[in-house]
Every structure is written in structure tokens, then in C-alpha cells.
Length: 391
Image 1: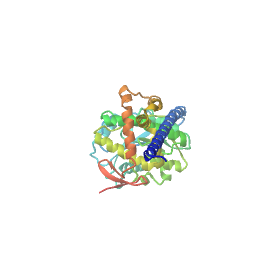
Image 2: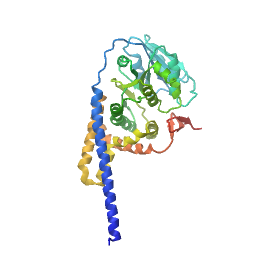
Image 3: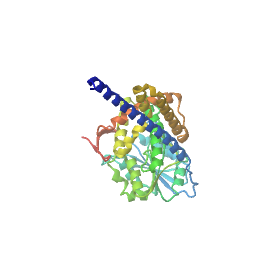
Image 4: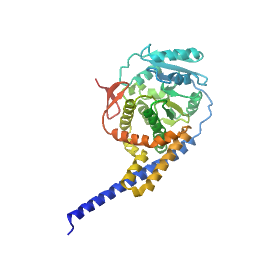
């Protein structure tokens, strides 16, 4: 007859083996994911950019609200485009917006560029950016529209590259990969590191496995006819992640969404730890509602926390954890050095484990809560990604 103490030992033995097996499976999955990032990056880099044979006129739409750091250089990159025919439209809520003086100064500096300002007033629905884009799109003269955020900085050839990618009549939308940069704020720099080494990898893998069924918010180019076909951009007026939805809708309507070969710079805001934590929380809660099944799969995009958990639980399996860490480092190098054509500094390499641990914590936090703080206002975030102002 088996003693009770022996039964307890057997239960704990089986439980421990099950945990070990689960952690090994998760680490192995994260290693496969890192390999997929490397393969997806190589496929992205092999795409050919067609030669520009005709240059359709382009309207560039930029919503503005306040004068964040680096705004003048960001907007100057729009004025300095080397392209035959384009116009710039800027939208403010109020005429005395601090960014207004910057735009007027640039209009005087580049008199040859056609630029216009729209005063929108307060938005009548939750997503103020969509309201500004709706009014600018209605005022725009041209059929090819580039929606460019105020924190985006580009080279002078961006419009030419985007126009060349629209020569394929099947393409309805082009969205640009971006190098995230944070000039100040340690926590924001960590956030930028995660965008460049983790988020981009997920975009590339999704592109390879299922095609681009979404868009990236900082810079999106779209045909006016696509917006009309979806009922107008104002139909996205209460979505938090309108960029994801507009790409998803374009794909659902049967038009191609492509990840441009042109890389832009996305200068994310610096600030306090609290502001960054709220930003991260809004990001993960929005992502979970935009792609519920894909969000669960993001567990495998965190190989370093999984490898650390395996080492702590079963130290003898450190070679498996080490192999996972090396693959994570290789995937990060490919994403930043090859795709984004930038460099990871020694300090950034040292901070990568901290960023991955923080990313894992917020991934878990994303499963809980249904409110977000956005531009100083609190919103309820519904299951379908729609927002409603609280109070």
C-alpha cells in the first residue's frame, strides 16, 4: 500500500515535470518565432521597388494639436519633398494652437509649396484625429492621400517612393514601417527599443504569413476611392486604433495593403514614467481588442522572459535558454540594422532584457481593464475597439 507522503511526492513530481514541459514548449515556440522574424525580414528586403513612370499629384494631410518637441523639423520634412506636384493640409482645433506659428513660419520659408490650414473646432466624436482627417480629405484637391502624423520625419524622397508603389492598380493602401526614436526620457527610450526590435518583427511575420491586413498609424497612403468605398473615413470616428481598422477594411474590400519599402522616423514623446506607462497600457488594451487571437500569440514574441523563467525553474536547461536569447538578439539585429537601417548602441543592447521583461508585464496587463487615458481624457474601450468618453 502506497503511503500518503509518497503520493504527495508523486503529485509534485508530475506537476514539476508538466511545468518544465510547458516552459520548454513556450521557449521552443519563441525560438521558432525569432526564426520567422529573420525569414520575414529577408523576404521584405527582397521586394523590388518599381521605377516611377508617372507622378500623380498627392495631398498630404497632417492633424496638429500642440507643439511637441521636434515638430518644426518633422513638418519641414513635408515641405522639403522632392516631388513634382503635391499639397500640404494642416488641421488645428483652434487658430491659436501653438503649432500654428510653426506652420506659418514654414509656409513663409517654402513659398513654392502649396499649403493650407483648416480650423476644425472641437471634434463632435471621440477620435479627434479622424475628425481632422475627414475635413482635410474633403478639402484636398488630389485623389492620392498621404495621412502623416505630426511626429513623423521623412527624407525628401518619401512621396516619390510611395507614388511608385501605387503604380500597381491593385494596391489600395501603402503603410510605412518606422524607426521609433525618443530623444529624452529613459522609459520612452525603452519603449522605442521595443517598437524597433519587437513590434516591427510582429509586423514582418504577419506580412509573411497572412499578408498586410492592417496599417501602421504614423504614415498611411490611400486612394480617395477606397475611403469612399468604405463609407468615408468618418465611419471610424469612434475607434481607438483607426489605423488598424482602415487597413483591415481596405483588405476586406479586396484591395491590396502593402508595407512600403520606405522607412520613416517616428519621434515618440518623451516624458515621465507615468505618461509612458499609460501609453503602454493604452497600446496593449487597444491591440487586444483589434486582434484578440493575435494578441494571445504575442506570448511567443517575449523569448527572454520565457527563457529566464525556464532557467529559474530548471537551471540544468540553461543551454536552451541561452539559445533562445541568442536568437532573440539575432532577430533584433536583423530588424534594426537590416530593415530599419539603424544601429543598436551598447546601452540599448544592455537594456533589451529590461524592455522585454517590461513588455511581458504589460502583455499580461493587457488582458485586464477596459478604460484608456488618451490626451488627458478617459475613455471606455469596448470589445470591438470602439471608445466612448467617460464623464
